Image 1 (cartoon, rainbow, N blue to C red):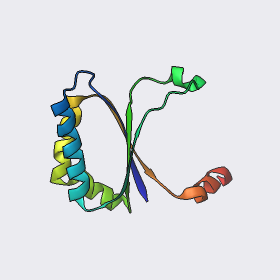
Image 2: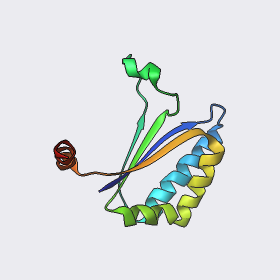
Image 3: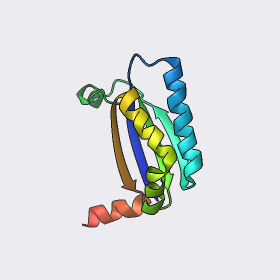
Image 4: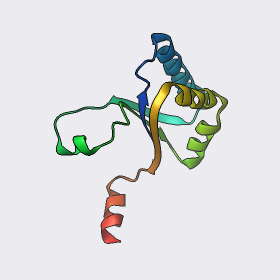
Length: 115
């Protein structure tokens, strides 16, 4: 399984209409691509851990989008409905970090330790 991990921070001056536009475009891309297997959305939690003060303030939200394989991820990224999301990223966010990970449960951890 592939996890497409997106950390994002909206511009502080976003209007309600801009927020609704982004959410609608994102939902449309998730629904239309046909290769998305799961989605989790989260908000950053601050709880006083020491590492929090050392992290750059680059994310308020997290999206983890799951795909069966890299081909499914690529189909999503190249789908016409995702083009709108990409355009909105550049216009509505102050920062975004995007990473893709292969998920292999604890078997991958064992391979890392044995390497």
